Length: 514
Image (cartoon, rainbow, N blue to C red; front, top):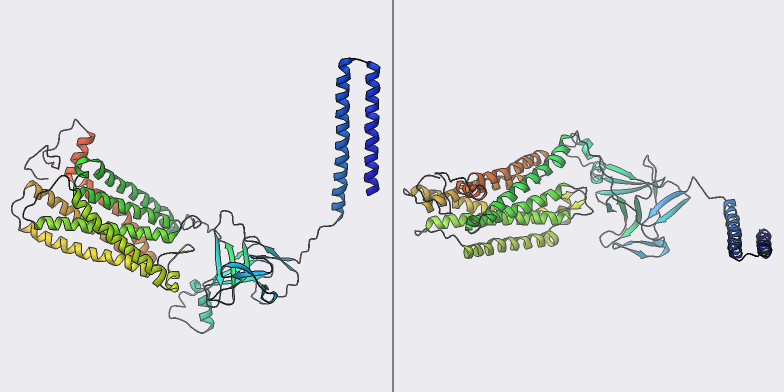
């Protein structure tokens, strides 16, 4: 082969020399000044083409040499995707080099369940899987875990879930309802192809012998004919979107109208609407469990509970303000009441922040891991029952206190025989507070029951939550005649006010009912 390459180079050099000689003879014969440069340029181009021809022939010879070597394609070769290098294993969540006696030795299992299948010819493929748009999720298989990893004899990885029920059945443990839920208790599994997983041996202080794997989570096919899917994934997000719009309308109405924005009740209603908007947005994020790569559901749950707790503390401030005002003898409403709003802000936000810190601390440091795993959304852990109790126990207390405010204020109203305009306005605020307490309490109660993992309670929560924002819009805007009057006055300048309208605008003082 070396002689052939040398011969090709020599023949190419001979061709170049002959071409140059012919060009010189042609120039000498013609003798034209203009043609001399043109002919020399063509000669150089011819020499360049001859050189490229030589290089191409050399590359073709090399490729032919490689083609002679046959590619190894062993059908009996089994590829095993390994997370760490061959001389490393997974130790405390990192790849660390170990002795040869501690190397990962794969144990193959047949599709029928026969273990320790002899596979003599296998090869490790090092590296984590490239999941693309799918979620890459870590799985740990240890004694007593929910997950079980089985390496099949063709290189696929089978991931079993719900395997603790299978172990209980093998040990003779059987509940009264096992016969009715036999299908639900069977272990579910999914087979991951080559490139969709990596498997390795794992060692940790909690589990000395375990298997660790990175898997690309399979996407579930959405069945549009399933009523459960339609209600959870289609109608529920639509209801949340409508609720966000309606709550935003309430906040805008009470914020942009000068008379309402300077009033203490108007500021409280605006704050409550904003808190409920944040809770609706956080709950909307938690609906879409497919986007686990981009969303932390535990953060969304903390924001949901924090905003909902703040809304109830502000509602409690609303009830206390009305209760205290009715109890005082000198009842006078100031148009600008910023100082009182600051006092109520310290109370509402301070209590909310304190309880939130306690709940988060209790979840991460006091709650048991087994309880944390009971609340899963998609493949992520959410806030546990201990944190939920710390978040929602103050809400229950505020509801009880608000009921006390309602009962005592109702007695004070019944004792009154003469009403002025300020008393009429206080009574309207009291009715608004009572209706808001009723709607928000029912919505919170169904939200709490929906976390009991019962489909009926979840469906009830979706329906009740869908009616919460429209009812609040009716209570806070449409039912309030002075609010509708201010809206007509701001939007329709030529429309005269109704004789039954009243409000803080103080432009139409009359003694009619509102």
